[in-house]
Image 1: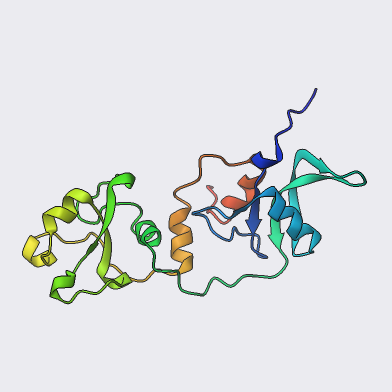
Image 2 (image 1 turned 90 degrees about the vertical axis):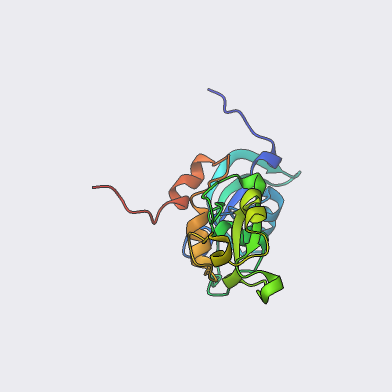
Length: 188
């Protein structure tokens, strides 16, 4: 039986922290095959699983890593960056006013409008569909009778990673499965 080999470009490596959890779930922490090999040769990672695909030079051959773990732990205690994407992730890509999940039509809304002193901060921004954002306009939730489902707050990196687990990428290599959900509760 022959094994169908993939091109190296189709062989990203899942990157795990030193505790064998992915660095991030959304976006999933992946390195190109070149970055993974570089980290292997610089002794920054341990190879946990490999693809069947091999790369070689005139004097050396090795299988491409499919899962690598960092040798040094990366602390996730830092606060996440305040970005549009992270606001959407915090709010599960859901309009906080009507519950719509139209990912392509999401925007963000100032709960207290800027015209009324509202600031662009974690505590005042929520994901909103275009329709709700237009409907609410420059009014407060009380004035518009539109209240966010959840009070906006600054998430932790742990919270964003937990939310990201609900949005797996379209492609998951079989060697990654044991590491993506290893801390999930087992059914009795």
